Image 1: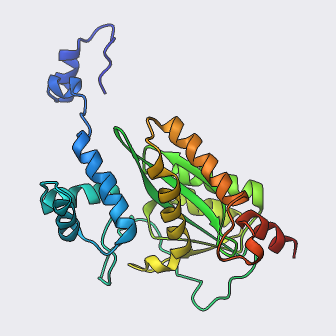
Image 2 (image 1 turned 45 degrees about the vertical axis):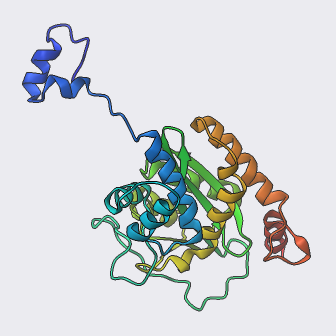
Image 3 (image 1 turned 90 degrees about the vertical axis):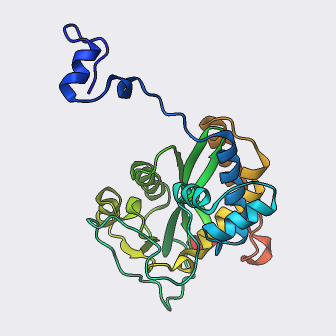
Length: 273
């Protein structure tokens, strides 16, 4: 609302007109401290091994590592990272109330064909001065990562771009499954699926196991790539993650597939069949 180089109104006068303090205009956010960023990385590493840890148990774990932290601090950091303890409770996902929630379509469905079911999810990537978010779209039967995007915000645009890229390169799936996050329930995202004639499926509340295969991808990605590199900026993270995902698709044999086939080899085989 404030235009610093306005030809007639000074910054003081503009602040008066919009009824904000001049200090608010000049304020620059400091972000998280170096210690908090380190704690967030440690929380993320431990969460991969013990996803049932809540703020209390995570604070106890960090105190045993020598960090003087309290439950409220850890709760704030976990909330900022989008992490919550996985256990049976009434409400673990908080979708936008204005968005439509679709039913889960994969219960007791045999999934054995390429492009039968795709799934998507978002994870947190630690950075020196904050964090970024990674979305990936995976073919369920073959575990192939069809598309991905990295973003420093949690809006729906980067998820929609990844979806459009996957549809353009690999065709159309029969069913697309996600959690109930607002990025996936947004009209921008669901409209792309509807226009392509794709059935939309969403996990039940608290049902992280409904999308377990992409959750396992995040664990592998972080242990084999993210935690082995000290990303300095988004460009480095994008290049390194892109290199690892190509390795995962084309060179790394997947334990699910026979004859030590890679995900992309299995995808090509099943699609040809």
